[in-house]
Length: 354
Image 1: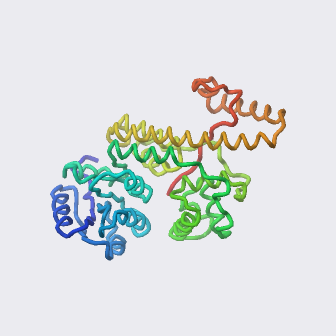
Image 2: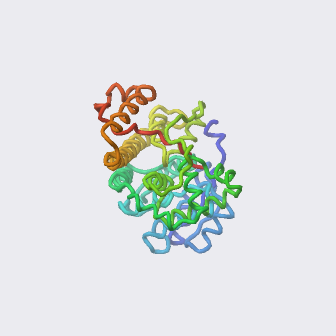
Image 3: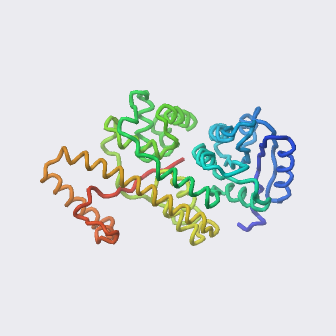
């Protein structure tokens, strides 16, 4: 589709004063690709308006209502009120805490007011396509927060806090099912499944599905189906646009999807070339892989206390055989690892976000 034929992008604007809101709305609407569906100078009735209008993008002041964290709270609630709306948080200064909290709340972009109107329009356009928008400093803040976050402790899952139905939902999430697939399995609506997930996140202190899966697999109390497939094959669409969409949906919890997004942004496949976004996704994949490795090493140390030397040797041989078939680059020691000393193969999580 050419740029001229692209559909109009609907935008909701919410700034902290009426003057700022009107100026921002006028500046954005000068771009013929955008349509301002509503401009709001407070958070009053914002969720109701967003729910009714379902805009493609919402540009929200981080300090809406004179509260520095109010914009993040609105972005979080917007995910429920209007799931199809991508939020951009507008900031006076890109403070580390606010940037990290914005992305944790579900924002797809952060933009500093010192930027130009042209840059803001480009930000809105990219975010409307499902892409992430952040400057180099903001990306570094997010990556630092991801690397510094500690792997969940086994007792952190707190399965006693969850109802039997919520435990069942967690199990299906860990098996890689989307909200739609979980709804089909449990004979419930997708909206009900989303409500279950929000309650589960709140009870367990998880920010997203990735953290929930790490908690689930680190907890011996989780009632997993014995047929749960953790290591195995996955199918990515061959068409570049479909593959880009699939990886964007799976990137929260799928390291391979993060890496593939980096390649697609780098090569301009399925999206315009964007070296900043490519660098961001490569760094995220690196950080996520490191977190998985740390969790694997910790689990293997615990298991060594329960296994005999013969059992450990047998496990290492089986790991080596698996690597030769599925990951010959690791088996041939390209990463500088001694295959015979590897505790377990690094798995590919089969997971998809709806």
